[in-house]
Length: 230
Image 1 (spheres, rainbow, N blue to C red):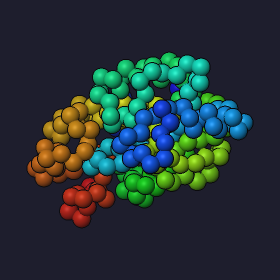
Image 2 (image 1 turned 120 degrees about the horizontal axis):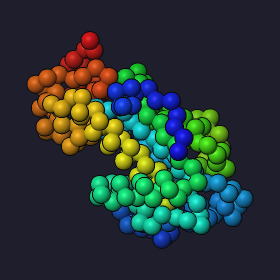
Image 3 (image 1 turned 60 degrees about the horizontal axis):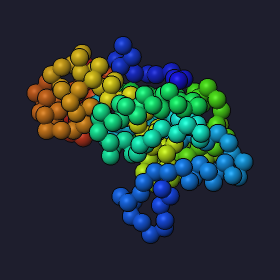
Image 4 (image 1 turned 90 degrees about the horizontal axis):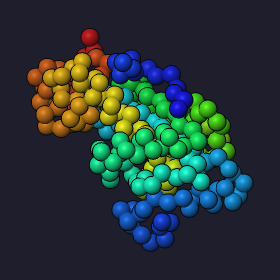
């Protein structure tokens, strides 16, 4: 696996037919096969984890799967149990042609916005792949600027494309592990339980203790405008 430079030092220690609703999608290899038939051999999938939390980085992953050795059971990471995600993480790492990651910290998110940070993380991890992809499939509806290959987006892509689903699992598991590690440094916030999302317990801890510089996102409500960075 290749890894783009991180600015998060705290954390370093079957094809769906038209007319189907998004929640009916099951990821398959249809989009990848269509692109390969058109001459694009190495297809990368891009996804991110951590757009919504009040704390921690946004993490993007880029994965090129081996069409002859696809991991079984891939799905949108949000539809899998933690145990299944961890199992599939290992399978992807063992079977994929290439995997890369990029994380951007809360301060970077605050300096721009979460969408810009997510797109930048996607670009950086694509650039960091050990093998240059011929084409990229991106979850969502925005393409990062200056990618090293052609690309198109798939809304609910992690539920439609096996390659994007693999990227969603790599990003989610990596970010959860980063937040567990951060929780050892700041145990009062319970980061290992909620991964920085705005649960009642997390919000209560912020109210009681205040946010942590470099960890919490000061541009996000309910922190925004109420605390200043020290």
